[in-house]
Image (cartoon, rainbow, N blue to C red; front, side, top):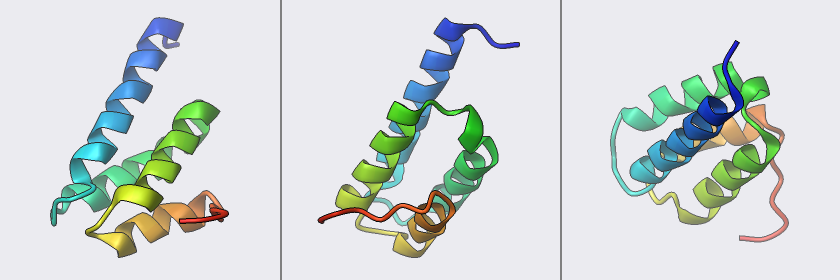
Length: 80
């Protein structure tokens, strides 16, 4: 079982990975989205919310890939 400090580091790394893909036309987005979906239940709620909010507001490329995650998380933002 993973320790709490390691989980925090892992969650932070996922946020950084998501930010990296926001403005790049790269296959990394789909890979990251699949990784996020596979591990969604293990990611803490604050990190989930942050990834979803930032992707919705900031991602300018690969929007179809991000939409897969939004659908998976049933994410319905109140505004853009």
